[in-house]
Figure 1 (tube, each protein chain N blue to C red):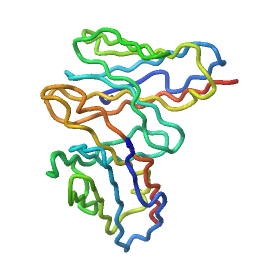
Figure 2: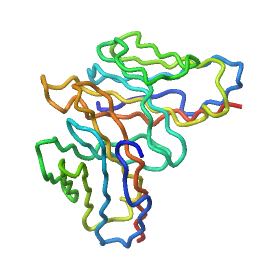
Figure 3: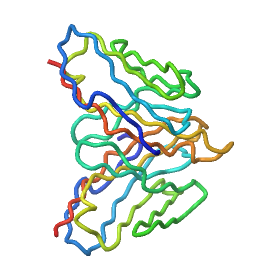
Length: 118
Length: 112
């Protein structure tokens, strides 16, 4: 099983709503990532969790709140978003790899959640 | 410009032709990867080349890396309509961590 599952596939929310995006993998990967991707642009790294600890936060606004409850699950809690936050949100995971090996950087992506903020 | 710039931005070719995409980066890297993305979907890893490698092959893919010029190229030989997608290079900074920066991407269209 080499699948990363993201739910929901589509989400429409108002600026006062609170919603959550969910990402799940059962490949034993211990690094999980959130990316934001606008149309015709590359993915932009938001957060990285390594062994369930927040490893990277790319100065993301606090209206985005990540959570890693266990090694298989990654959430992104959304609150008071702006219309410019509308984008495709991608989750990815990677295997720890051998010590010092680059394979830990090979990422497996979910299909994404298409978010529209009205 | 940011790490991982690519050219061309868009490429249209006939089925059977070869497609070459280039990527340039700015800082010291641990490795460089290429990913493919079909419209509006997740990315799929294609190939990884380490900083001490110069060329790597995988099926119809050939990747080169020139660390002195901080550049890489992806060649897809004998292209097929199914190769139509966006292709991104991704660099992992040489800090031992997970920080991955994607290039702007090349949109490839292969006409049948």
